[in-house]
Image (cartoon, rainbow, N blue to C red):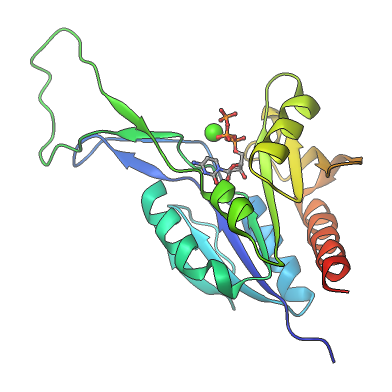
Length: 212
Ligand code: CTP
Ligand code: CA
């Protein structure tokens, strides 16, 4: 019997606090990450699920809730080696404030500048440090969808990238492209559950290929 595969799935948005009540974030429903986890469970795999603030969670997984990109990075790093397949459907904030103010900032000036610094690339870390593991990410693009997604696939050393446009936001169905180094597979206007099945099955297939 082959061993039980472990998925590490990153989901939801991250929140980067400016002060105690304001934050920078991304739109993300958590639906895609949840659908991926459901399919992985159906395929009798284990799931470690790291999620930013969201109301959509799978059950029967090891659930790790985080708030910021830095927390998501740290949890990913400490769970990374336990996983065979890592997929990030998370909408990680690209930047965070250099400083988080302890108290609510008063509007005592006509304008203000908030200094931001780049967050670490979580899935890029996984791609660059993988050992007999499969790493997949998503690419949200509003132009040159396939070309830009391919660049991310290469730069982050991913095995697979799933490209989608803005129209998939929050909705239950979407058109997505599953892309590896050679092939682009279009999944047209399908339910996220069906897309999740294709993604999970493809990652398992590639994993079994590197294993044999
Ligand atoms: N990602 C990540 N860590 C970050 C930013 C993004 O792990 N700090 C992951 C996302 O979860 C996704 C993939 O990288 O799986 C691509 O995210 P996307 O926002 O499309 O691309 P970026 O690399 O952030 O580039 P840009 O936003 O400039 O297009
Ligand atoms: Ca980004």
